Length: 278
Image 1 (tube, helix red, strand yellow):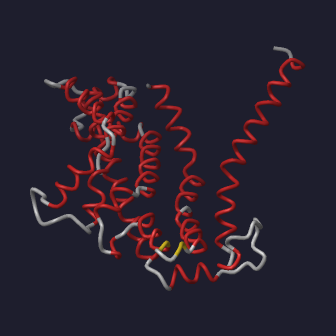
Image 2 (cartoon, rainbow, N blue to C red):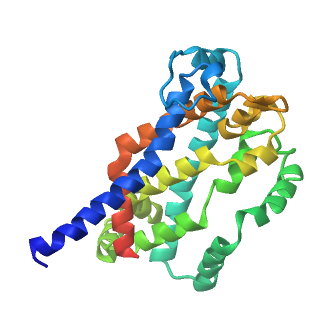
Image 3 (cartoon, rainbow, N blue to C red):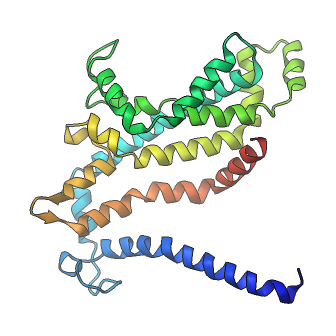
């Protein structure tokens, strides 16, 4: 295609990208701008606050339980991410590099679980939490909030696809040097799979940070609520405190922005590499 013939296509592409970008950025910018508005300006049509104030931040940080909800979200998201990084990688490595009876059937069962909507799993999860096999009830505990996300079928599938690309010759050479089977996974496969592990960790952290339905069901004590669940308490029967809701929402995206800014290379590399291997 000549340059002259290509410019309408490029122009249309840039216009569409600009439109899509504005569609995503404008609500986000409005949320941040609203967090600096006093309550009396919330319903006004002005985009920027006429009398900007940080009183909303002082209120949510010092007069509400938001710091506690923030901490709960961090604990749950880190627990799930560490668990998924290890167990999903280990399961993916086993499925990719070992042969054992029933392997194909077990893997198909893993993939089948992806087709079950999360809403259908909530009742079994709740029964397991209230009447666990070991110990007392998991309601209002970090373990209760985090356990459904400690290992994911999607993560196992992703890591299996990547681990298939780890050279068998390299593993065999390490075996001959006396490296244990777990050492092959930990010292050779994991370092080679770091881009995929990084992408898995980032997406898992984002998913757990924003999770709402299960933390809402499994927690009743206000001090054990996560950030998305706790923010709903800024809305009461008398009406919603939108200035506080927007402030809490703005604070909730800070960790996510930091992750995307500092680890975007892992996100892009992980998606690209796992896409190629898939």
